[in-house]
Length: 478
Image (cartoon, rainbow, N blue to C red):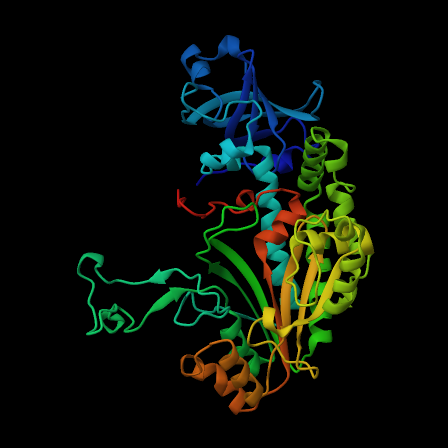
């Protein structure tokens, strides 16, 4: 059995003059004597001091950046700057060589674009060590939040025959032979010959299935992969991403907003408490980046200040109609500084409008409610004015929309009418309509794109840098 100590524990240890064994990857090797070793348990390295006079020269040549080694020796108090402990090695063993001529992660600053090309190795950098530790913490906090509140975790289908969003941008799932595709008499693909006997896709949302479960368990949440075949190459879009989608029976829009605000504050607080080292590193990294920008493009808040900003303030709630009035009268709109000018009620808000409301007007997170029915999905509850739906979007600084949700339409007749208006086939969603036939009840839910949450909490600017192996148009590497 392999026995070793984790570097994160040894860096805090005062148990000097004891024998320890560490295993990790070489970050640097200086003067044939000082190894900076990291095992992934923390961002910090431990210094391993080699007695080069009594070490085989061939072994010393193999201690290169990226090599995996095992070092046994005595934990001693360090006299050097920047560390409190180090290991005086009595034995060093190479576990895996790394050719210094070919290893792409040399000890220097690399661009994020370059690191995306070697995503299989970028975890070994401090930046991505921090990002994915924070991602882990946020994921754990999501589950803990819902578990503490008695929610049931549901695994909804990855393969589905329904398009929950009605957007039509879905990846098809098939086992048909493309060279010999079966056709019907009218020349269309005959999906009855396919594996499932019908056309199927990768899911864009677990919401509709989540609603079914909420009608039995009362409160559930999903947390799983979702897919969208949108040909978008922006810093905010992925083809494969993760979604958190709670659904709660006997809840209205007000309950929905309270749950969403509580969840956001809970998970951000958890990350702040449990990822202090990582967030401090990411905060400093962002400050250095900001220095390279012109003064007018710099963020008013540091990363840590932005997180505190969301924790310290109650989220501002206002209707879409109130927001339109504010935006129409705003200086950027009057002076035509918005890329998309707001001139009438019914416009779909863009990120620039959302950020103006959060960062300039209210200076706090914002929850917008009661959107025009024509720009929202069929399942959102129609308000009494017959013009708006009981929808909500939560807007955050620097990122715009973070959460989208609504009270769901529980009235069978209204739901059918909305489906017809929006071209959603009733026969395909017979099972969804059944929940309105048998014991229908007011219920509400929302969706949080997990990568957007990680993007916000880490301060990264490209969503491809907060998921291990990003999938986007023309790229499915690794």
